[in-house]
Image (cartoon, rainbow, N blue to C red; front, side, top):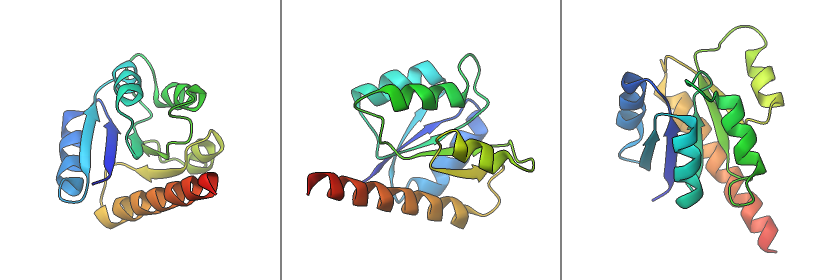
Length: 131
């Protein structure tokens, strides 16, 4: 079963994502950026759902550190954020996120589609590296 890391400080949001994903994926939850970085370095997930507005270390900094880690740099990382103003999607994709989903999650199908797409692209990239 594929493992999804959810980095989100709001317990209600973690609970919602867990409820959406629990029958399809193994879900690992982190409340803070440093906790997530340490946990993912020790036990890498297949994809990361990363909140932008985290206390202490924001999602953009977590992403930067993931991309610097030899073990984690190719992880698909999806911005899961309430930042939904015009231009935010482009801003976060340009910053290096692989995709972008807004909160609150009103259509779980969108989240599931983004995850499936991210996992598919990751698998294709890994297959390409091993050839």
